[in-house]
Amino acid sequence: MVNLNVPHIPFNLPWFMLDLDNIQLITSTVIPGDISDTKNIVLTETPIPGKNYQPVQYGGGGNRKISFTLPLIKRNNTVGNVMIIKQFEMLRNQAVGLLGLFSKQFNPTPQVLYYYGTGSIPLPYYVSKCGLSHKKGWVNELGNPQYSEVELELILNEDSPLYVGEEVYRKIMAMMGMVTGIMDTVSAQVRHDKPY
Image (cartoon, rainbow, N blue to C red; front, side, top):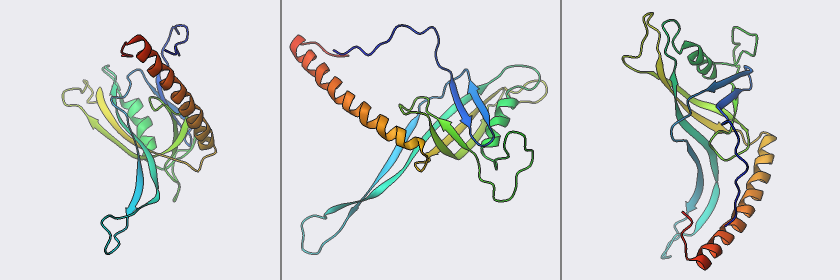
């Protein structure tokens, strides 16, 4: 079997997301739960009178969407988790930049740079959903939440120049995956062992 391990690294890369338009780094010691990564494939079945089947034609691809829920926990008796909540609230409002206070008409919501847990290089995404829920009983003495969950849905911006890097990375990793898969399969067959 091919060993792709590197020497032990004494730290884990923390979860993070970079707000590209407001220029803010959002990070958390808690990581998301399951991360959903979907992309629709549009196929058209064309009915033809008298045929026993419908020919299938490729109609295009949908947008890649990443969605997950991130717990926001900050137990204290003053602001609770309000500061990180406000960072996420900036993602669902018009971008104002690093020093701006008020949004202008027609300003879009910000894009974020994200890759954690997706197997991709860092890529820009549109934020299509940013919902917050605050947990019952997790409110401090001043009425501020201490435990909330943010539900995010991100849509990949495939028009970005960074996406070209992802296409190259995908091809290289797929070829390496094929070679590794063949070597692991042959090794398991010769040794009569299971790879898991």
